[in-house]
Length: 83
Image 1: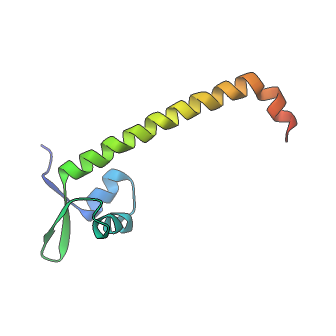
Image 2 (image 1 turned 180 degrees about the vertical axis):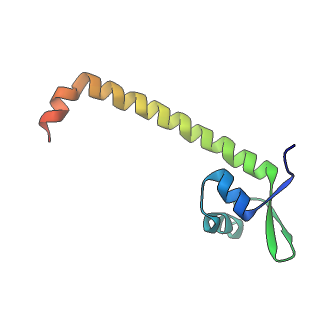
């Protein structure tokens, strides 16, 4: 069962960013949160949104990787002469 809220540490681990980045996002209001005493808790839906936006970046990385592979295949000999 998925949790409804995550701590800043859990959020950072899930998103593979530093805890400081999570605090910066909170300060900049780039991520929805609630305050529980002195602690910030992040809504699970916010983490899902951020993870979804990262998958777009992963797709872009995949396209770039394919492009680089094509370039090295087609122009590898020429690129080696530039060294």
